[in-house]
Image: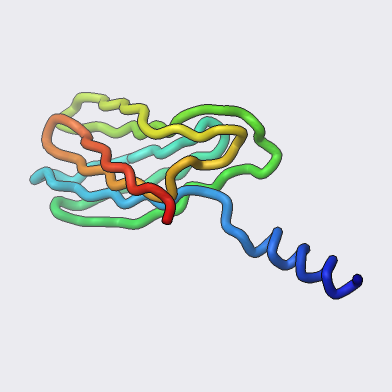
Length: 115
C-alpha cells in the first residue's frame, strides 16, 4: 500500500502541467518584449531575431480551475499586436502545443492536438 501511494505521488508531481509553444519570427525585424500568458502565468521573451525559432513551455497553476485562453502581445513595426488563441478548461490545456508564426503585420496560430 505504501508503494502504491509513493508511486501515485511521483506520477502526480512528475507530470508537467502546461502547454508547449513554438515561436517562429518570419519577419525581417527583431521582435522585442513578447509576452505569452494564460491569464495566471506568463512568459516574457526579451527578443526574437528575424527567422529565429524558439520553443517555450507555459506553465499552469494546479490550483486554477477556470476556463480561458492564451494571449500573445508584442510590438511589430511600432504597432502593438495582441492575439488571443486556444482554449483550456478547468485549468487543463485542451491542446498540447501551438505554433505561433510572427510576420511583419500579424501572428498566425497553428494548434497541434494531444497524441
